[in-house]
Amino acid sequence: MKRQTTAPAEPGDTGCERTGSHRWSLASLSLATLLSALGTSIANVGLPAIAHAFEAPFQDVQWVVVAYLLAITALIVGAGRLGDIVGRRRLLLTGIGLFTLASSLTGLAPTLWLLVAARAMQGAGAAIMMALGMAFVAETVPKAQVGSAMGLLATMSAIGTALGPSLGGALISGFGWRAIFLVTVPLGMLTYGLARRHLPAHRHVAATTPARIDVAGTILLASTLAAYALAMTTGRGHFGTVNIALLLLAALGIRVFMMVETRVASPLVDLAMFRDPLLFASLMANGLVSTVMMTTLVVGPFYLARALGLDAAATGLILSAGPVVAALSGVPAGRLVDRFGARPVTMAGLGAIATGAIALSILPASCGIPGYLAPIVVITAGYALFQAANNTAVMAGIAADRRGVVSGLVNLSRNLGLVTGASAMGAVFVLASDASDITLARPEAVASGMRLTFAVAAFLVALAIAIALAGRALAASSPAREPSPEN
Image (tube, rainbow, N blue to C red; front, side):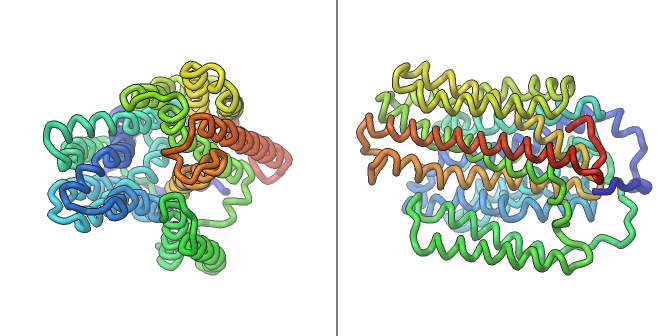
């Protein structure tokens, strides 16, 4: 894509905000990332209490989680593009305010379906925060520190994911289920205050034609992504007619979306971007790696409980190792990117994930708990390296007027990978275990399922490595693309 020159910033931009307060700006972006991750993980632990409070079946209560994820998946790309058009600072403040307001409504909801509606609103706010976080890094952080900043955002996401279950359990025990939503209100207010004071004003980009909001494309893409996410989550792991119909609808939606985007003057997603082999390869690798990471979260609890016979407390303690490693390794991973560049760190991260997946298919059967923990540590550290490097490489060569939508695409590829991993790889695990009900499967059957599932996961990482190498080879042979030291 062409790099474009920027026009004068919005009123109020002093020109020194980027260098003078970038640390406080990064603090607000980090808190926004923490909020969106916490919104996902803290709700899961409250489902039993919510079901009891509203006397509702699990099939209804699970929408408290699904509505949040659906809103993020459907809206994240549109949110990124809208930020490029109307101003990222203005929209991010709106997203933080929306998330905070929705947190209040979820904590006060008198009925289950009002709670679900408020969670969808909260997810819309989270989509804005996730889409614009990475886009803002290029505007608030010195170029030499972009890798570290990306690592910090990954760390905050990991902390939010790890903190949710333990914090939620403590709040429910002391104050009831409503506290798990109300606790994010003061944190949201703090984030809003920091962002309003320290984030730089949006810098408009000169363009030959004025940018407009692609309403048709936004609605089409949101509907298509919602259909795919529903196909992957409806039925609790059992694929049926409804799931197939939703997948066909999603496939049709993508086709129609591509036709519409080639005909509008200011498309939501400029399809020409995908001709950049580095961007395309990065998005594909991101989705595959996220699928593998979700596999560890889906398979791990069943393996520890059924195959190794651990109780709930021991299982929870071991499962916390992954998020803890992610939280500790995010910033160091970013510093490695700043020092050595994105390309070698990306490959090192992918290599570590592949090594860990292969080890998980071999070691646990003979080494027990250590044979499970060691590969998980390697996989999680590798994921921290990959995220910091891949996100830095993607955002490095993107024109200013497309940073929001590309940031949304990166987060979308990750989210689709997580959704696919929970469904598809969960199905692989059940089939490999040869059990109709995995909660009642024999220990040796679960162990066998674990081996085959992570053999498939290792293949997916190998595919990601091949895609990344092919993308770089195509980029190197393309005379139209300027070489970038970050990539």
